[in-house]
Length: 124
Image 1 (cartoon, one colour):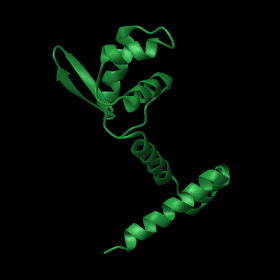
Image 2 (cartoon, rainbow, N blue to C red):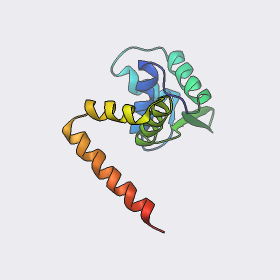
Image 3 (tube, rainbow, N blue to C red):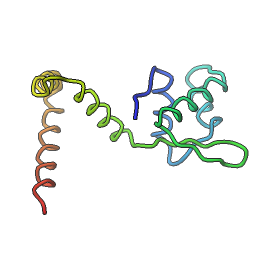
């Protein structure tokens, strides 16, 4: 799974994550153009590119395609973090650099997540 490239791809992904189900190109376009003018074909191209990257799936609905995110926002974020970490030659140093940059609140959330992960891994 690759990261969305650019502001418009990220904005489209935000619309898909916020939706209760799959959205057509027109539905995504309508939601995005409430904030800024965009060509319908631009949104169609972005959705097609996201589909080719494996970030969205599509299904035929009538004469149109409806798109839905393959993973939740949280799953996607975790995948990006894992990919970034995989690119590090020194993982402990990368972890330390990350921890030095996050807020105290995020550090507490990370500690809680680690405790939860440890409990899951220790279960038979």
